[in-house]
Length: 114
Length: 110
Image (cartoon, rainbow over all chains, first blue to last red; front, side, top):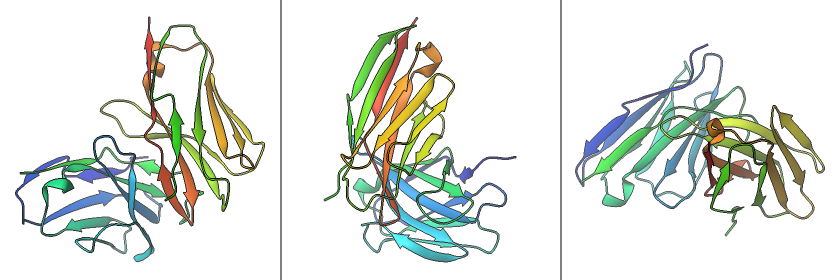
């Protein structure tokens, strides 16, 4: 069974630009969660999507948004990029919604904002 | 602000040593406690999801215990091997969101 895939793996953008990251979950998994990791911080929860609906959201500004498609693939968008958005963005999929379910992580997208 | 604390931050052990680390979390509104292993340049890999007070889980040489009343979990590695070198993350489930600690970085020397 193929694992969680994320594209692109690396991205360089400049301040003010916007970016879209993509996550394809494991086949059959319907929940996708997104996390941000910056140096010295633990993984910070961004949001969770299940059946095309955002069911939970972390404490991030409205510049961070996401969506999920009918095939469970998810995209995350960050508008008006700031230097502090430079981070590793991980997505994780699970069979069902809810944080008591085992999550399977992708390899991440490394975003650098110049 | 909810905090998940892991200690120690880093650990260096010799091959064959047994080791353990701690994850502390708020004891109220507990749903679940996750442990992950994250090797450099790879994806975090789930080790355990624990939901009940007193839970003990085992996978090979790695085991974990959970105390939800006092808000801590221990991860044990018996007879550490160089391939165990990784960052071990715990995550506490609160209001259905996972709150991660910053991890314990384990280095096992041959």
